[in-house]
Length: 192
Length: 192
DNA sequence: TTCAAAGTGAACAGATCTGTTCACTTTGAA
DNA sequence: TTCAAAGTGAACAGATCTGTTCACTTTGAA
Figure 1 (cartoon, rainbow over the protein chains, first blue to last red):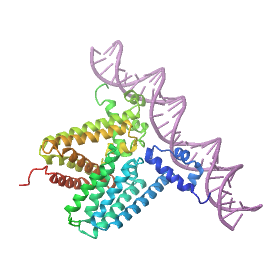
Figure 2 (figure 1 turned 90 degrees about the horizontal axis):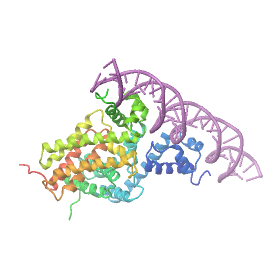
Figure 3 (figure 1 turned 120 degrees about the vertical axis):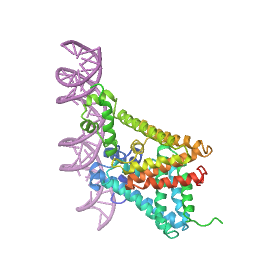
Figure 4 (figure 1 turned 45 degrees about the vertical axis):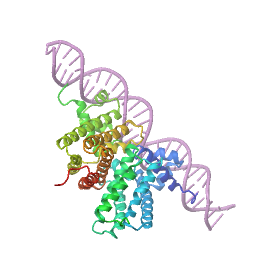
């Protein structure tokens, strides 16, 4: 039992699913244990507290999303390659497991700016924005910071729109607006 | 004690403040009672449950926001009058009481689409969008629905950006993007 | 001054929450 | 086959949660 499907990873996966379906405060430790079939003593051997478990869940999700974004961005070095983030959103919105963004919801439930969960969530969004900026800075360095911020604003707007109204087309609209911004900033290849 | 500063209203105001500061699940009934100085029996005389209190808080906030928006829109009948919503956001973001949007956070904590709190929150956003659409439909009826949806996406994006990063300029950026959309849709007065 | 409506305060109920402890069992590498 | 590491299960602790009840008090209009 030391290696295959380690309990720790199974706890993180189960917790992620339940946090998404029900929220952080509304998901008790006991439910995570029941659904994962892991004992309470084991949970507290791996995680010091529920907060530590939440942070572990967010860290995993953060790594996955950053990696996926990097992969998309490197596949299309053109400035408009950044629009791939909206295609990622679009696919996500079509899945049944979409319940909004972990990090936005976490920052809402843990609203104090100094809370570790809030800060980590804000850090995730910053890092996503930094990826976009890096990609754009090769083409339009003067505007890359502003553009990246604007794109992230559109990303979050699309996520919340999809979360609240089950609006599955939110990513496509955000993508169009984003494209307009790129054109307006003259940070896109010419349409030949 | 029947009329002046009714207990019911006082409970709603206190609950609104605490929900904003701490979130819905994280704010217990007992805290609301302690901070408001009202007895538990009185609370349950006025509200059937905590959920009913939450809904009353959201209803009040909904009425306030709709009224404020209507007032702004009627003050400037030009198409670009809709941009007033971003000025409202901007003022809000500068206040110390800004902890994000009640309705976005409520929809995050009560994530089930059929939950009464979730549905009311979605309804609020829809109604705000409907106000924008009505305003625009006088000038560009074919695009007013799409434009209103896009503006609300920018509104929510700005709110989340401000909430997560304490980015007090988020409303101003969203406003500029919104203005671009109006120009692009040719739904604005000419700049003379 | 009377009196019904509104509110209080305190106890109580039962559920649920996070976290601890420990004797015992299972696992899998050596 | 041995044995340390990992995990279990069950009890326990104490806090906190929403909601109920009821004898009593306060309020303010008539």
